[in-house]
Structures are given as C-alpha cells and as structure tokens.
Length: 100
Image (cartoon, rainbow, N blue to C red; front, side, top):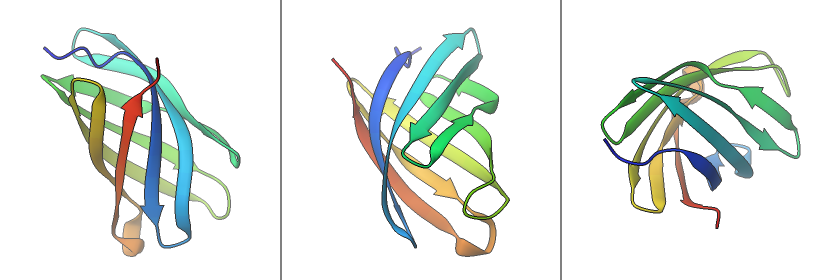
C-alpha cells in the first residue's frame, strides 16, 4: 500500500476556475478520514476508501450550491492526481503535491 497519509496542496480545474485547497488524509487500513480546506471553507471526507495507491471519497458541498462531489485520486510518491465529479458539470481534473 502506498503512503497516502499527509497534507496535499491540490488544484482542481473546475468550470468556475482553478480551486486551490489542502487535502488532509489520515488512513486506517482500507479507509481514511480527513477534509479538503479552501478559501470557500472545509469539506469533510465522506466514505473515504483506500485501495493500494488509489483514494475514493465523497464531499457534501454547500457553497456556491448544494451538490455531492465524487472524488478519486492516485498517489505516486509525493504527487497526487485524479478528479472531482460534480454531477452534470462532469469531472474536473485535480492534481497536487504532498506538503513538506
């Protein structure tokens, strides 16, 4: 299993422009908890799962409008890459690096 724990500086390239955030991951076996904190607030990880070097989770966004986000990312050393799916808006690419 990859070392997925830590804080990650991430950017999601959404239809509303680039969204910078810090993703915090704390794994325990095949699950994880944490949040994604940005200038618009923090979203808690819901149903965080770890499968090798792949993370999947949901986030319940309230601002700028209510929507459940489905997220998937793969960790490769100190890099993370994946996407955030926002219903009819499709999947926005997300990438980042582990904070030192």
